[in-house]
Image (cartoon, rainbow, N blue to C red; front, side, top):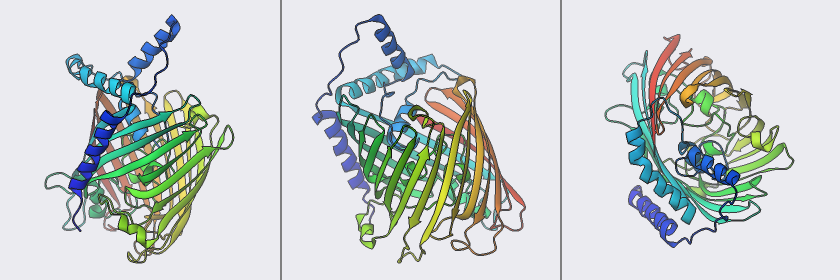
Length: 446
């Protein structure tokens, strides 16, 4: 089947034209009259480069809205590069005018990752280089005084290897690592596609919401603070539980989550189990095979839901007849705790019956993130996983992981992060007791 790359660009162009030209200006609150309000407005303007601090949140840290807000932060980096910030000033000022006048926020992210392993299987490369590119945005269709709102979200994305290198997502297979994939998110070949094209609606001042359309499953399924490409972890152990199922990004899906008390939320979600990365193909719905999940969570307060939370997720994945994948089910628990102003911790574990194409039957991971000066972070984490005897083969050794990294925020829109992983007992490489993986990741945002 021919990939509809041209169709994707046409859709994106049309969406941009609609958002920037046809949408009438949103009604704005009256200007503050007292000096205290003016001071607050100035502080808000200084905290974000394009005024994205008030984008409504729904989903995990890598949702379109949350990533736009995070990338727009006016950080205090190690180096100021005044000339660069001055030259970019008109661009961010224009973005601010667009969101104020049209309700449209947008941005670009480029992730680059190089990894080098201490060993590889015979005939396999021991290094990898790949990228993830995203152009994404939101369009506020309406906002009510009571906090209810509706908006569209879109994301144009590609993931691939660079040059003659394999992608980091393939390095685990090349080194014999089965469950604790060292470059999990960096796929070998993910054509330009629109993995997010959705309608998101909020009720009750953001305490209840739903999303429907083409969704990225990892944004909502067991989402928690470390489930992001821009954090301090790269190994799958920390960013996506190996006992959870996957499908293609851009699956036709629906998600609803909401607080039923001040501290407890409930959620339910469903995804097309046969979606394919980089392929805008709705015919997979004809198979009628789905990933379904429900969740319950607790947080001390609504304001702390992003950093202090305990959640339980139960999931089922239908058997995929054509793919030959048996039915799977399981559960996961994730806990995040803000131990101090500068220390964020997590513990997560999960269990599955090994079906549904999952990587592991059991897994545990834990980690700490220490926020340093200049908006930099040091992270350290550990993980363990028991490979699925259904997805792979019976009798594989358990794998263990230690990972640490330091993220240097070199400018407001550029970070560099060296990363070191030690995988003990690579299950598919019994001749090696451990494998070291050194990596370096760069992130550019605009």
